[in-house]
Image (cartoon, helix red, strand yellow):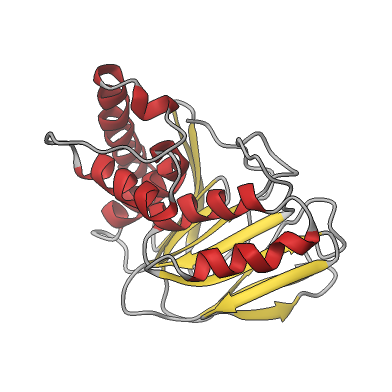
Length: 244
């Protein structure tokens, strides 16, 4: 389940404590009101335990490239991944990094009013003021020159990025970056994978945006391919200074 962290953001929020945790193959960059490393590790191991146990009994969950239908009880994180994959029309493991970030973040919100959890470019957050996150877009001329400004929301939300040109995550496309905004981190992760698979050239951006905006609960989309950028939805782009 390890996901490459090449395009991890380093947007440190003033007043929050930053820490990294590693649990098996999962590595998270977290910001919270206090160091909650032990709590985060416990949550990750719990989430991974549910996923690993489910895969042991249902191996198709790991390998399927298309949504699965189940008619038996399953842990909430499994159901969330399956529901996200159905909306995005991808395999359930396309939502794994986002799901783990979300479940970890929600567990930490019991002890911290603000939380940012990043898992390989998939970010779950609950923040009280504006924050800018940079977008790593590989070899694109727009790499690290564009940021997304997010504002306080009453509920947690997600900002997930996928790339077909950097990192080791599986992608059938060649997008330099696909960033999705949603209240569901699992869905944002799965949708970023879907749209990333579609974009092989700059002219594919329009079709990818059209597909993405018709997925329920998706609030914003950014797609970068070489010198082109496509935008849709509830988001605010900002030009970044030479060094963020």
